[in-house]
Structure formats: structure tokens, C-alpha cells
Length: 391
Ligand code: SAH
Image 1 (cartoon, rainbow, N blue to C red):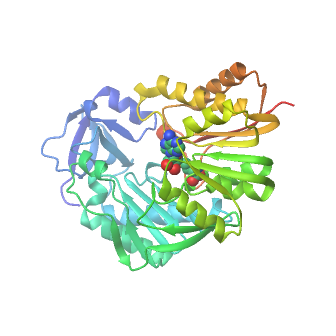
Image 2: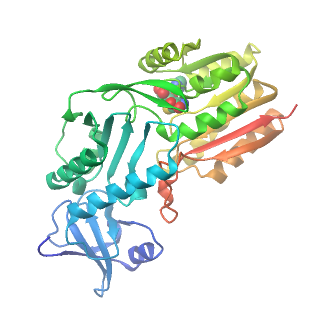
Image 3: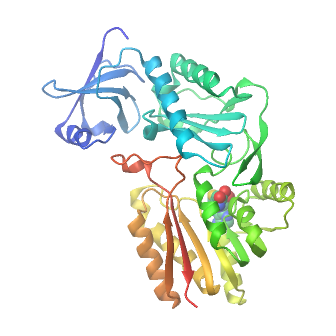
């Protein structure tokens, strides 16, 4: 890579790296003279002691994302190798699906790159200046093509991410191939997929194993709140007498309905604000045997923690009051800032207020294709807790 550019970091930044974290914040950079955006850099402390090689962002609060403890001579080659390792890892942990996350950024030692596989279509997200470089994009696309032979590769662009990274805007679209829609199967349930529609990269793949777990305990009349395209509803329907899915997004419910047809199942879909609907249903004495709560992230930053916990508690309290004895509550949070302990404490407090003693059946996280890297706590974000209301 020619001359190695150097970035030096403060003792606080050095301590983070020594503890195994991959990030150094901008406030801990002591010198980054004439380092261009997105460079491969050698990281040292102020006395010049090396920590290894990282990718540099000139604008993000996360200035440094570590790549290796060693010098890196050929970044494209390193990235190709890491993609192969990420794919090999999926072969050991992914079962019963043709849709899963192939590359999960830091957790696959590929900071700034996310790749999801939906059957024969790959959906890619580029989150940093370094990964956006043409040479790196080309290496990523060519390695994915060689390993997976997809019918198409599409890029999903989050304009806010490009703005934060001071990258020029670009549209979402096909990078290779022509198909933008396909179908995929997980746990024997079929789904429609349109690569350029929907939230995230199309589906909530991180819940895949939780769908199967929820289906083991679901029974009777079920309500899937924040159902999106029906992930939980379509899984529990086999074991329930009736299933109702609720979401505020009409386009999501339209796909949910097509998914129900694809699986030859009857599910009722209701377009509503979940908070209002739960309030109405609770006051009209509706009862269920199974309720799933999977709201969007309430805490986007640490500062939102208290208000997020109040939001989660309100939802969980309402749901608990609507559950029949022996009923199952499957309750989720995808906010990284709400830790597992915070979430369980919130749930305990909701159970107390609802006068519904709760049994903890399973405390779960994200599916194994969204690995958690132990020393990078930010890689662990999803909580899915399955409980039973005592008889
Ligand atoms: N359970 C889904 C994922 C849910 S994501 C799955 O497994 O696929 C969160 C969903 O909440 C989104 O579909 C979004 O449209 C919906 N949503 C956000 N705010 C809402 C509200 N106030 N009322 C109802 N739905 C809401």
C-alpha cells in the first residue's frame, strides 16, 4: 500500500484497544496529520508504540476501526480473505434457511460492511469511507461473486450514513445482475423478497432463530404486535387457533398478507398504532394466549435510555394484562443502549404492576449469523425474552 499513514491516539484510546475493542473515538486521536478520508492507517500511541492497522474515517465520531494487530500490505486481499472466513463461519452456524447475514461488520472483522443473503440475491450495505473506496467495492463484489454466484447484488444506501461519512450521495440499486426480487425460506416458512423495498435490507434476519423458539410455546389466540411482514405471525400460526398481526406500515402489511397466501395460512392484519390499539383492546377486555412485542428501537442513543424503558414498560404492562393464565409473552428490544439486565428489570417491574407473576422460559439474543464479538459490546443488540404468565 505504499507509504504507511500514521494516526496516534491518547492513553484513553490505547486502553480501549488493549481491552480488545475495535474503535477509537475522534476525541482520542492525538495526531492524524494529512491522513485522507478512508485511509488504511497504522495506529500508535503518542510515543510511537504500534497497535496495528485500522481504517480511518475523517468525519465519523468513530475515527478508527481496527482491522489487524499486524501491518496490512494488501487491504483488498485481506478483505477477500475475511469474506471467505465469514462465509465459512455461516456454514457452521446457519441451518434451515436460505436467508441470513453473510457479513456483519465488526463482528466479522470487516468494519463498515454488511452483506445479507436472500436466496439468490445479495444485499450489501457500505457504512464507512474506507469500504466505499472503488478498489474495495470491487474486491468485495468480486469475492462475493466467486464464492456465492448470486443472481444479483444490490446495494441499500442509507443517505444519513453517507452524510455522516461525508460521502457523496448515491442511490440504492443493482450493482450486478438484473433481478431485484426473489423468494426465501426460513424454518420451513416462505417469504417474498423485494431487494429495493422494505425496511433494513428487507427482512429482520436477526430474529430467525427467535421465530422458531416462539413457535414452540405459542398457542391459542395470538397477537403479533409490530409484525412488519409477518415474521412471528407466520411462524406461530401453525400452533395457534387465530393470529392477528398489527403494524403501522401499510406496505409492510401488504407483503405480510402476500406471505400468508404463499404459506396458505389465514392471518388477520390490522394497520394501527400499536400503543393505541393495545390501549383500546385492554379497555374492551380482549384476551390472548400468545402476544409478541417487537417494537422498533426506542433508544437510539444512551440519553434516550430512561424514556425508552418507560416505552417498553408501557407496552409490556398492557400486553401482560391482556394475557390469559398460562399465556406466552414474547418480548423483544433491538436497542443496543437497553442492555439485557435493564430489559429484564423493566419486565420484572411490569409484571409486578400488572399483578401477573411471570416465568422466564428463554432469554435469547440475535441469530448466530449476526455474531457477537465479546470485546465489542456494540455487536450485541437484540433481546428476545420468552415468558409465561403463571396459571
Ligand atoms: N417483528 C418484525 C419486525 C418489527 S420492526 C419481524 O420480525 O419482521 C418494527 C415494526 O414496527 C416496523 O414494521 C414498523 O413499521 C412498526 N412500527 C413502528 N412504530 C409503530 C407503531 N407506533 N405502531 C405500530 N407499528 C409500528
